[in-house]
Length: 344
Ligand SMILES: Cc1ncc(COP(=O)(O)O)c(C=O)c1O
Image (cartoon, rainbow, N blue to C red):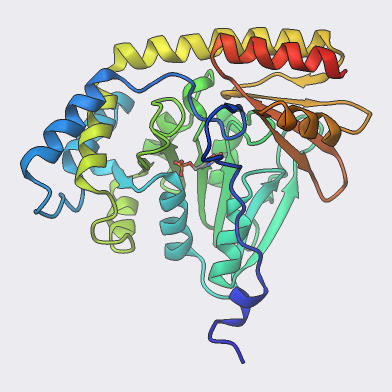
């Protein structure tokens, strides 16, 4: 006898990257930012905790919406604050796809989409990119919701905005562009939203704003889409400390820009060094680098782990393998590259 719905019993839960609780690891496995958040974040946290914790937070996080709207050049009405962008994906899935209905996403892409589909009890279709990194125009046919990770995870490749628009215009459903890594990319889909109701973007402060521990992300869409999604979110999905801290991070664009530039410079150096070591390096538009080669990769991952260097190893259903290395500080990357030189 089971207490649970049959799809919950039969599904496999999402397995996040390792988060070792002891120190001493070089952590290049979950695409966190190697630099601390803006100093204004700590000030905001201190202020938020002095007197107000006995009160509920603002349910719609209006100050955060205003700050995010200003950064992206959209109205605050077009922003929905979320408890990390994973919460954004949960809200969208719950709002759009019923039991037995269809969700679609590219293959490979972020592993959480399939898990959300399993929880919902809906069908999931994954579609491979063609050799030019494009998706078929009928990618969304029959679907109630489509996800496209852009830049993609774990590969760091990008679908150009015109292709995204073409896919959304031909879709029978919302097309959600998961832009967790867009701040490291040359372009993004936000400017397309005003002319396309079906296009929805999700963002996170976990990567480019160094706030993975805080859990703040958001949805950008036309106002009427946001108004409907508001009905689905938990009433207080963002806490008072998160709202204050994330707002402060967005307001310090100068600090954000400096940290972003450092990551991009180190990413380039990492790509060049890994190519010199003989790996096939996919040019990255994110804060990680995806590498492959003809011989097995798992032993490299294991050997690095023994050396207390964590990266991420992937093997797909067709047995192709890859390693994903998050961009760390220059020191961390030097250490990683020294270890790699001994292994290849
Ligand atoms: C593609 C993608 N989307 C969403 C997320 C979730 O980010 P958050 O920390 O905002 O929940 C991640 C995290 O790694 C990701 O890789």
